[in-house]
View (cartoon, one colour):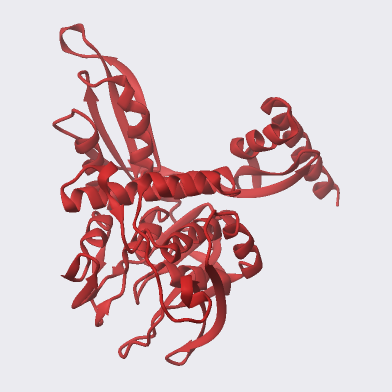
Amino acid sequence: MSRILYFDCGSGIAGDMLLGALVDLGLPIDLLRSALATLPLKDYRVESSVVRRGSLRATRVEVVVGAEAEGHGHRHHHHRGLTDILAILEQSGLDKAVKERAAGLFRRLAEVEAGAHGTAIEKVHFHEVGAVDSIVDIVGGVFGLAWLGVERMVASPLNLGSGTVTMSHGTFPVPAPATARLVEGVPVYGAGDGELTTPTGALLVTGHAQAYGALPLMRIERIGYGAGGRETEDRPNLLRLILGEAADAPNPGEHVLVLETEIDDMSPQFCGPLIEKLLSAGAWDAYYTPIFMKKGRPGIQVTVLADCARREAIEGVLFRETTTIGVRWQEWERSCLAREVVTVETRYGPIRVKCAQAGGRTLNAQPEFDDCATAADKAGVPTKEVWAATVAAYRGARGDSERG
């Protein structure tokens, strides 16, 4: 049975709130610190404490930076470009999947900032997000969400707040320009004073959530509360994460958005980055089909599968990144097998296996390819050997379980 993580963003979301909720949910703070310590960043520390927001207990995780980390109370914010941040990620000791997800988020943020300021991506310099604390918040959030190992993430509509927010570029109405662009195509509303959803929080939730709406049908396992840095009068300043197993619904079907367009005048060099940008924008899957178009010209059909709430965001990527002048879309019903990820021990280390189930039976089991490739590189053996060893280990563990 698949596991679900639900982001309850009734009081918005920020990077530090997500870290606090993850630690409250069970992420060991020392494991988080060890992962972040592989980043080539200095002069900061990660503090965790139990606090109260309103009448509720929560975990507060704070990144203390620069001279403030030494107790002098003065913070220095560095302006970094996308290339600087990608280099920091590449030099870290984080898992490949975490590096790639974090890099994709920073690239998306660079595109948003470039669009907001009318400049090229390579000329974008992050101010608030380029600071050490924001880099740690984003990378730590990606690491913690990957640590949970859930198959599906769903978020409530995002509460953006109201009023104004002051940043390095000046004072702006809420939502801030970057936040407004990051939540395009996502259900949002404004309630409460001040900025409740920050650019960092918007980047993390929209980069991971596959759907938006009410709490899905699930059996709750644990709940984590992450505290923001200030008290709010009308509601506790908390992000709530709800972790559980998907429950069987009376109707197993679900809606899926299918977008398609045909292209015959675009360089194939742009095809690889296009898929990455579509996935970063929230697509579940995207693929190309070779076709022949009018006048016998070869072309491609781009097909994208996504949650219905992501239509405008996906269309935006297609219009910006391709030469198409039209996109058609429709909503389909689909039936899915229940999914579960299990970890098996092999002689090459632990490897995750994706299992598809129906009626209490496992109908398909596939080792996680990235895990196999990483283990193969470390052991100096072909990836197919790690794959075969994982399949054998899974079958052996399953046989022992059935005999037990």
